[in-house]
Length: 128
Image (cartoon, rainbow, N blue to C red; front, side, top):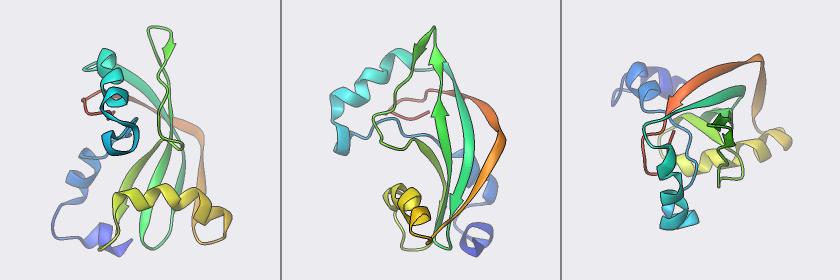
């Protein structure tokens, strides 16, 4: 957590402004999967943030992606989330392990009740 708060490369505001939900990643899901989200580009997509999962190396918010024009936006990722921060030497991809780490007692979880609703603009490349 200290890395996030005291990191010199970026301010907390810059880190939070760059946070996003990855719906698909071209290396994992292919270019066609990423391109399939093009219909949502520059559109507001509702996202509910339902829990914080974290340990001393990383932190994420679980994200439930909503509907646009009555159509549910389905993430290709098994666990849609927003990576808030990772510690030095920890890749953002490693944040995908947090739910399992929580089940193993190696991470903590804080349920956000009621969930926080955020309207995110689809920015391209499979990100909200």
